[in-house]
Image (cartoon, rainbow, N blue to C red):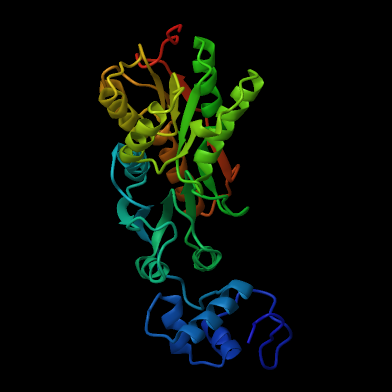
Length: 348
């Protein structure tokens, strides 16, 4: 039964946060059962847990005694940890954590876009001071559970459109895609391909939209065969690079929506006997450390990952201290870094 409109026996409609006993009265269960749900215990029937969580979301919860202090921990949650992208994020969070004498705990979702069912229960048990969620998405239920327990969270490089009330930090991805394509157009390229990130990735869609805007503004039609869907992995850059370079009229330049894809394109060009940039120009996105050590060094769009992490961690700490945020949606600027992988195309 929904808790909407419910009132406590002998009282008028509930107008503020409820105590554990009041929540138990609402749900028709024992105080011990409500305590288990509040403290993240798993040994509660699913239907009962859902009913109690709904009441807490609707009315809030207050403790009669002073609440236990949160652990001196920032929890950093990754969809997957696999390259220097994640190292830059970790560095930024640790920088803020040190300033506030906090520890950093890493969690990995093993490639899942959304945390599994038991994730919130574990977080409620650990009760960190704040959570930084990287390139993943919380369900409405998970967000509501964290908010109802006073555990602040901030999204970094969110994979989907964050809910209005969810603080987030990203980069100017659209402008980055625009600057990458404009750079290639300015060199004289017209057959410019793009290898995207995952279709559901908000950042990748913005980068591709920036690329399309630059092409359309320059009056250069986008060949559908030149738009390839990738997954931010070098293997996808290699596979799509091979296919693009085998076309009857192959591209003279390829823009990849991250640096790993660009490395795959480098390999595809080498297999085809092409030189970069003499025969093929390549632009990446992220500007991770390996970009400057490729041969030739990679022209790429710098994404301020460490600064994004610092900003997100500082926001989480501020929320944990009970201070309001000046803004809940922050975008940091990207910047094109020109190196040796781009030059004007050869004339026929």
